[in-house]
Image (tube, rainbow, N blue to C red; front, side, top):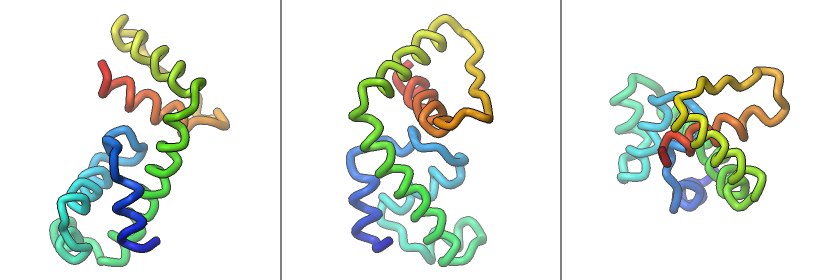
Length: 114
């Protein structure tokens, strides 16, 4: 994926909604702030190609999220999780779910909204 495609993928969304670990989300934020792969790689002790792989994966997740965010069922799922968080219920996502990624993103978005 080219740099401008990645920039477009991350544009207009809160990247904290995406699945992935905190470090990868921080890398996306640094990339959005204009840091080069080399600067990010130096900061995290990784190769520039590994940074590119991580940003590619996060960009694909961002594109997926943008399409998902328009889906009514997904928004209902987010609302359900917001309610659960407000009631301080434990949210457990079964690892065998086919749509596990949707649920993870919905939980992340619910936490941001709550």
